[in-house]
Length: 83
Image 1 (cartoon, rainbow, N blue to C red):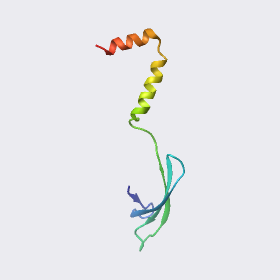
Image 2 (image 1 turned 120 degrees about the vertical axis):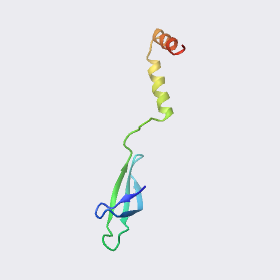
Image 3 (image 1 turned 180 degrees about the horizontal axis):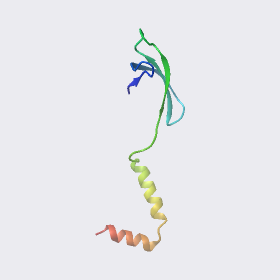
Image 4 (image 1 turned 45 degrees about the horizontal axis):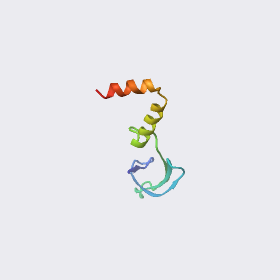
């Protein structure tokens, strides 16, 4: 992962990090442009959303949805996909 200094647009190094939760961390960074900048700063790193959910989650959703169908609806669905 590349972190760019927000002050001089130079390359930065992640010196340490603190995990705040399963989906959020703080990255403690230092600008490598020590002569002209040398800033230290904190970036937030957070999970935003899935583009494709994990298979286990997808199967859980499917199981839940199928369990809400009546026997007749399940039979029609089965007939539609068995062709």
